Image 1: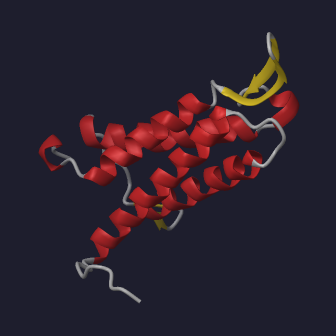
Image 2 (image 1 turned 120 degrees about the vertical axis):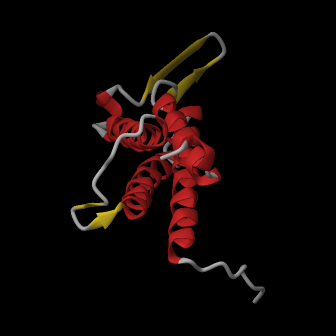
Image 3 (image 1 turned 180 degrees about the vertical axis):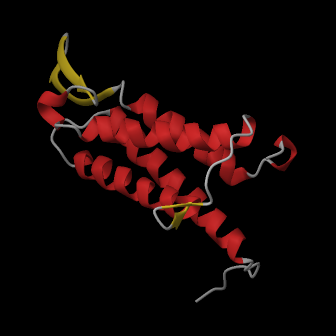
Length: 144
């Protein structure tokens, strides 16, 4: 790919993947008040199991693969397990969104969870933008 054809959805996918990965290093849960606070990030498997690690892997995979294809001229197969890249981005983004958004309602949810589900929403929006562009449908949305 040529860097001159950098689309907004590509920027959204790379930035969303990077923010998703970085969010796992921030507190996902925080308890306490005043000077005594204790928190846990997405990598600590005691409270979250492997949920934070799955979110980190999804962010790294999406951001890394899109950046490698865009800037490193890495060729990837057009379809993986019968799905094209846009469908995989949407499915992985939805998985990360469901994990992080579900944790948002946990007692003591902190900024890392918020950033994780927000970046997953950005990834899903970018995947939908790419799917719409690939379909050739250029009609703008209409009012109800």
